[in-house]
Amino acid sequence: MSRINRFSDGNRSKLEIMAKILREVKKPTGITSILMSCNMSFKQSGYYLDLMKSSDLIQMNSTDGRARYRTTETGQEFLEAYDKMILMLEPSVFEHVLM
Image (cartoon, rainbow, N blue to C red; front, side, top):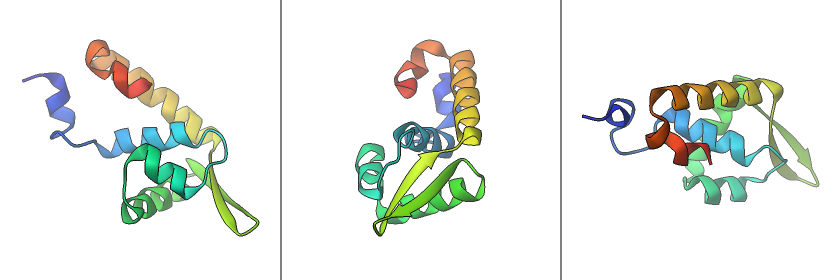
C-alpha cells in the first residue's frame, strides 16, 4: 500500500481541498471561480469557506454586492506548512498537489 492511500480513499482529503482553495484565492476571487477551479458544489464550498474564515485562513470582502475571498497571512503560513509536509511524505506522488 502506498503512502498516498493512508491519507485519502481516492477522494481528496479535507486538507488537500483547503490547500487548493488557498491557492485559488491568493488574489481576491469570487465564489464561481472557486467552485470551478476546485471542482466542488456550492454546498461543499460553503462548508469549507466557513471553516476557513473561522480559522482565519481566508477573509471575505464584499464590494458592489459581490463577495471576494482572499488568503490571509495565516492562510499563507498554513499553505507553506502543508506544502512542506506533503513534500516530506512522498515528493514524487504529491508533486501534482503543489501545482
